[in-house]
Image (cartoon, rainbow, N blue to C red; front, side):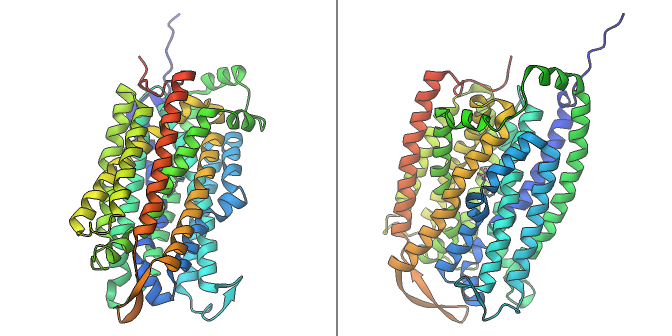
Length: 461
Ligand SMILES: N[C@@H](Cc1c[nH]cn1)C(=O)NCC(=O)O
């Protein structure tokens, strides 16, 4: 009898890279919306009367439902229990719904003069929309991580995760670079216009995810026998598995490193354009172009470093180097006399290297510490811890700026606006970097003790 060796769809390089591109596109649209208002902080002040503290509240609303209603953790459990297709579809739909609410909030005049829970009503509804969107984008993020593990385990996993992060950064870069021109297009300043562009992108992202669902079904069909075999060997995910994750020291070190490191990058990006205007004297119409270098650097470097991790290993060491660079950059940003825009550009580029090193090693390291059936929950718990930082730090920085850093007033776009000294916020970011470095070292020591293989290559054979 002739025996045929049945191949899984994931053995086809074309199929797995196509799947990656499709889901990465959906995430790219999500990242565009995440940062779409960051470069127009000044316009939000002059057009919608949002102060820096209001902007801090808006930015922190990203974590409201994820953190306080534990939606992110629920999303991870749903992912492990119900699977990739249903969770991803729900998450992508939430991104669209949240963005639609936010667009309505920043474009309508029916809320003018009203307040809700002490907040201006327009700001309140923009926050609700952003909070709903954030549940979607975070759950979509963990779903996509699990999708990559599903297609790329034992293959180019870190390169694939790096590529996905790279495309996500294209979304961030577009937001930083093009929000202002979009808001100013057609001769009339309209801060809702970039949000509308993001909404249209997310609708296309939703369609892209539905296309991916077809591929996912085909992959499952091609592995039907293997899946049966796996199910007989491995139990399904149980709620008690959460305890197993939470008692894993290696997981905690990654989660804490993640919250500290990302708290010094994403919240920094939210204020980076304003930093360029206030500290480096860059014109606000082009100030977003300097922070934009950071995600653009990531686009090339994250897959490159991922490739190094795949072939050579050294995951824990890569995270240590990334944390070190983060400290250097923020410490130099806090030096008052370094106020030339060329220095700002160089520092942002180095920050881009740091922000490529750590994610390229961090995300592919999680499957080495946690088994695949618990991965959705493990990623969601890490993101949950991280969301405390993404929520709290912008709020802290906005409050610090309003309370301690106002240096005077100036005329921009025909409006009197405050000017700010960014030394204190940059010292706070440096502190996060220092703590991140401590946890990167602890992670490396734990890896040595437990033999997770963080320093070993990902590609088998
Ligand atoms: N939890 C996300 C955070 C995020 C920011 N914008 C959209 N999501 C995350 O950490 N993703 C990994 C990354 O490196 O972007």
